[in-house]
Length: 103
Image 1 (tube, rainbow, N blue to C red):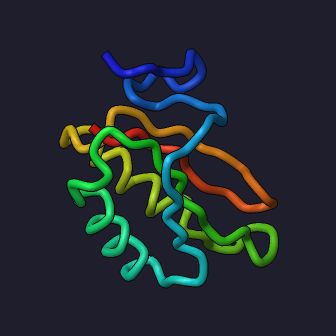
Image 2: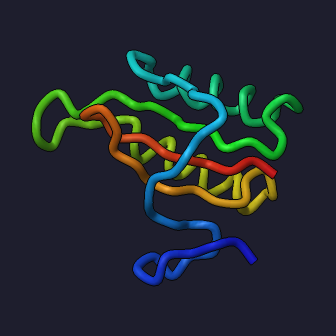
């Protein structure tokens, strides 16, 4: 079973930082383009078994929409499909993102 944080109660959802093998920068992209880019990257055989850092834009102002929710929902579905083994929300360099482990 995938690691899970006690707070989340969801398989494959963990919190924390750690080392990464590659960075996927989605900063500056619209949601549709970001999801498409992420979909291609996660299904690339070159990422199998690697840990990726997905970088997102910080909110422009409090309450402003960000990519965090749509990307998080996409990653949740990727866990269910077996593409990822874990997803961890991260905050690095002043911006939100995710640390994911590819199957």
